[in-house]
Picture (cartoon, helix red, strand yellow):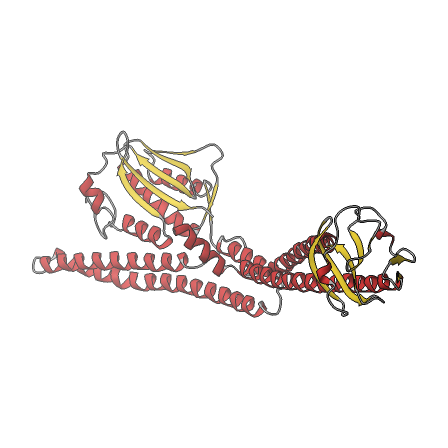
Length: 455
């Protein structure tokens, strides 16, 4: 049921399928109309031709039969159509006088023709049984000199008419089927050609989202060029907004840092005095909270803005080289080891600055707690590149892991830090829709797992 609904949704939302369905409908209607009308016209035409021919032959037959005064019948010469001389050819004639002579065509070696069709001086026709099957018969009557009635009947097997109609219908169906296929093929080619600019636009947008190209390149048909121009203008404007937002975030952080430093210094002096030590400690605690909140929300705003814009990607494992160099200097006693699977390289859909910030937070935390080594593993998992950072430190309990991403959470106050790192890392990951989790390492320590979507 679900697959049927999905197919209907695809059919409704696909321009190609809509155009193809319209073309198939019109081709079917047009070809069907041509087939129906052509077969009807041909059938009427050939039936009229057969009937005209039989009408003429029965009249010719009456003119060739000589009737004596006593009612004897003789044929002056054969009919002009030689098929009436060929045995059992399907073309027959018969002339008979009531209680008298009967003349038959040389073609009729057995059987006879039904005289009932010849029942009036007017020419009538009917379909009845002839010597070799169903036949179309024409006939009329004339009086003999002695008053008796002479019956003139001529007949042609109906199979000839049926075969002519069937042959025409078969050949017409074949040619119209070929024409329908050709029309649908050219219609599909026209659809592909006319929608090619939209395909090019879709690829350009995909490249834009993947960070491989910006703005949208090339020229487009005038029907969609306004859309492309507006998109390019939006891209340029959006990039300018993001650039200004980053500058403003930096300016805000810088402008707040100085007054916060002054407030912190005054709080420290106040805490050092006997009269204001408690108030000073409270003020210091509040300034720490202010610093944490400002840094967290600035990082969150910047990452959320970047995650909603296109054009930025990062390369793995290349992004790790400067990070490992920096961490090796920051934690010289820890060995940082990068292990990428054979041939594992990936382009991931995340801004390099944001990815570097998340990885530096995870690497710094691992370096702080590691006894001797931090191992970085890269592996492909479907559409994701999974980065696992494992330290050989004491690890964390399940309760500690559950609260590790809280703002300002610190489990060991003797070690440096603000308690913001993991919270910022989680916010950046969630802004991009990535999965960041912590879990006990298989042997000892803590493993941070980051699943990043590949471009």
